[in-house]
Image (tube, rainbow, N blue to C red; front, side, top):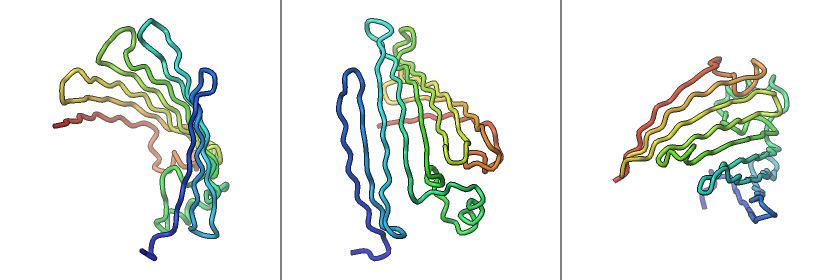
Length: 170
């Protein structure tokens, strides 16, 4: 037994509910006094053509060990205990995924929004992917932060970012 590691456990369930795929997860962490985190979400596939769906999704995350006051963020950063997406008490995420937009077989489009509801900051990102090569995937993305200046997603003081990625599998 590794005594340096805190005990953690989790349970999740997912099912179809009418046309929606729904999921729920509960996690336990014995970090301070013990706490249960929770996430709930759903996905809906909307067929816009005979072969192509548009996937829409939403999820919420409840984190009892998070902070509800941005004044606490400086201490968390100073102590080096910052973990992305764990700083706030409540998060919401939304996404749209189009695997083959208007028949472009090897292309994909994804847009997602992550919001720290506790501090009213967020991050919006759009990604274009190409998987037309046998062992190579290419992606380009643009992202932007928004919301309160002292919020989690604005801590780095950058408002925009971009990324290019090539993934070679062999």
